[in-house]
Length: 291
Length: 226
Image 1: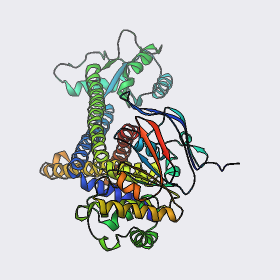
Image 2: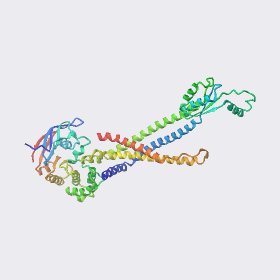
Image 3: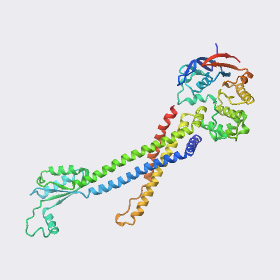
Image 4: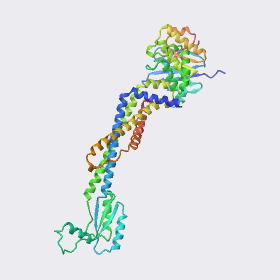
């Protein structure tokens, strides 16, 4: 059994050595595709976490009707807190808010002027997508003042969300396109190998080798192309991260990049590459072998 | 009651993809241990008869049976079971140019799943059997036509098959080498192997009193017993 596996692997490696140019082309394209896909994914994850942290910085101001008592205010605060997309709710008593205004605008807010501010809630969001729903739900509460609409940075929230959607779309479409290109190259590499080794394949079949023995070396070759492409992509990502980190070190304010997840990146990119190479070679084999 | 034929072609028709008839209603029976020459002009159908047995060619109509089994029953996935019952020496040698004689035979053995130990044990014996042991380290380009043919026959013997198919084994050889190859095939036949040879080398064939099946335009014209 070990002998047989060794024979099949040697066949696959010899095929790669024989078609070295095509192998390099397939590996490098697959590597590039996975590098861009992996790179975009990492940027997306970073932007996503930045977006998530940004969510906490987005606040809403919701104003209560006059005369709502503190126990009821606590109850309303609890209701708002339980809404999806809400991270925290703070009650801002009208007196406290007025004191702040006075400190902030001492000239404009002259002494003796009656406090015109209502009691309010500061609502901190955990998910920007839920902003509109939170706004509508809060506004519907009977304790809220319908004359004083909820205030929040709606346009800014939409911009952040659109940026994330665009990046998702970019990662998806560009990655798919690049993977398709890599697949075509692996397919071509296997087709060329099949063509260049048709004599071996014919001899194998004539002497009674099973279809499995004839085909598996090609599939191993395709899988190795994909795996090597994944490893190359992983290396390129690591090199990029290292280079970026070295540049960022000069700017202490920008802080450190998160450590490169080498093991996970190799597992994911190598796994995707190997699976993709296997599939591309399987498709490539089906046509010539059938005929 | 006559013995069941080892090989049987029953009203076999073959039409190539370009519409040309390869065989036109051929019926033929061959017993185990026979030595049969298929003779005819180019395109007469002699190679097609061999390729039907090795399933390199499919028949359109009729039946082709080997040891009672209809060959179209073998699918692409279990074809190797059929091929291990026979040795095939193709017309164009098909030796791997970058491998030595020893490696060419070893490669075939490895391809059918033999272990390295078996390979080291079997290859010298096969090369001795076909009388090319002295050229074991030579590459195909360094061999004469007769030597190449011996290697091809040796490679065809790796499964110790009861049937050997040789397509034009003397096609590119001079008279002396042709006779040597035919003698080798006759020796194998004498040891019990059924041998089918497609050839148009009548002078060599006449020296061996074997069965000759003459083909013309896909039909059997004459069947001369040995």
